[in-house]
Length: 448
Image (cartoon, rainbow, N blue to C red; front, side):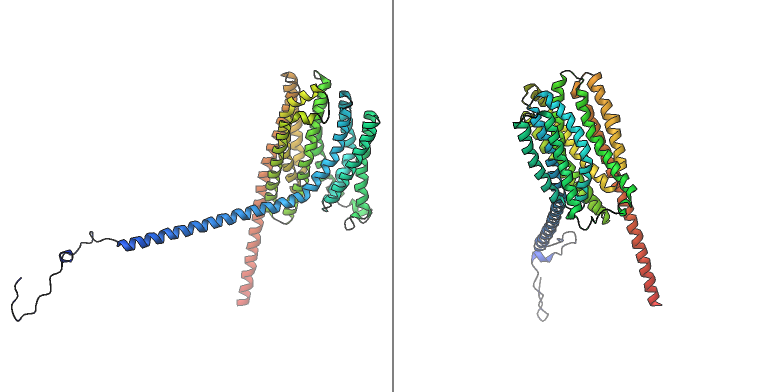
């Protein structure tokens, strides 16, 4: 390029890299530095979000664990002393049967039938007094009294049955005396100063609301009686089986162990009813459902524990009651049925407690009748006699009846809890609407 003198000098030519202008398609969207910065920002933001989500998840988990722990403490505060008292009271029967069983097989069979009658007479009084004290959280006193009566019963049984050999008649008398001692002790504590705020003496006020109380208590009594008698039928029908003496003894031992363990679910049955009723009284459907779930988890854990114990050492447990090898062998054969019964019974006890808390006693009584005596018992007769499965067939039919009962209770619980929650939400919506309307009206009046 030429240059003429006198004219302005031309600007230096740009370098080759900058001499050509890039087209929009060729220009980079971001520089490499900008790319790196945005990538680091995006990664840091994602890490912060993930950390925040992890913290929220951890907080929710910790909150749930803490909530479960607190509810568990509330349930055990009621169920612990109650279960101990029930186990201690039923241990009276276990001790009597163990002393009688080592006297002879026939003595064990006879005392098993006699104790059923004796317990049925005093259990009504004892159950009423225990529930009265449990409602006032006097469970500690019940536990102390039950433990004291148990110690007295052990001493009397050892002296008169073990040493003096008074036989099963003396054993039955001692058992009856011990049960009545418990009734008298609880009654005396209730009316002679133990409950000053709830017991002020006999009066006509005791008859107020008597019909409502009778309906609830009658339904609960029928529910428990049908369940208790259902498995006692096994002992009765086993008398007509082959090797009747051994069968009655083995079944007596199994049913006694089942009833002994069921005292713990019965404690949770009472605790669940109290907790559910309390939460419903506080208009907390969520609290009632949560209490039921925590109680159910406890029942399943305990049921699995005791079922495994029965499956692992059935012979050792049988030796508490008998020295007969033939009876011990049959107990070993029946141990799987006993383990399943223990597990299912624990679950249905909690569901029954939920029903009591919601006030469905009458409905559950009908469910028990249908499941036990329309499904379980006829099926047991078919399997036991018609199909020649013997005692195992009868027990299998009864287990199926209990499983049917449990499934029905699950369906009822889910359905009614859902309806209760929907009804509660509807009431809350109406309350909020009414509150908003009143607030708006109040504001309009002020503005006017």
